[in-house]
Length: 171
Image (cartoon, rainbow, N blue to C red; front, side, top):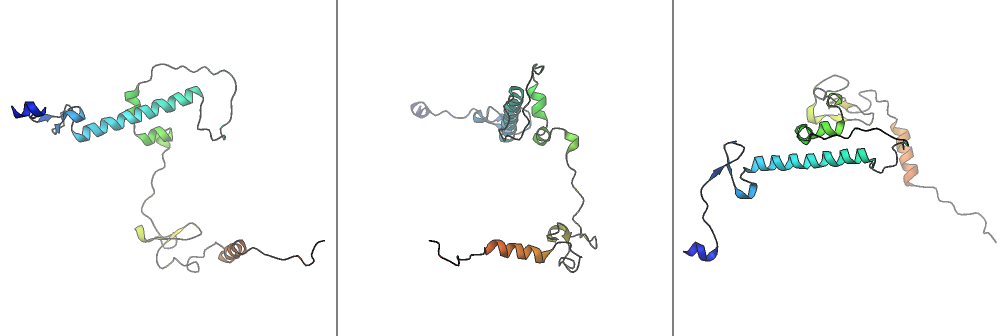
């Protein structure tokens, strides 16, 4: 009786996730567990993003940076039905990069450019753009091609502009 007065209902019992993952779902997450619900929401966002980017490409509205060439003329684009499930099943990085095979492969472990010793996270990057160990981190130890003297002169000249007063007062 007390539940009828307050409008609260006792839960009917635990319900398994509708994706049969073995966890319990709730009505707030459409009878899915939290992980399956989160994955479904992520797939829907990716599908919306892919559809909007496809629509902007087809309609010709680019990012507006002004660096894309403007092409005039008639284009024959076959705009058929798009399978959003196939698009959303691909990883997001593959959609952004275009071709999945052109993704940059990671290099092996970080190594010193002089002695090839593994440095990991403790490597020192030089202004010449290379990575070195603790022994070869100084410019005189690895024959650094970077010109520190010119860089310092330019920095000082930029920080301290020449200020000269006129020699004669203008009339």
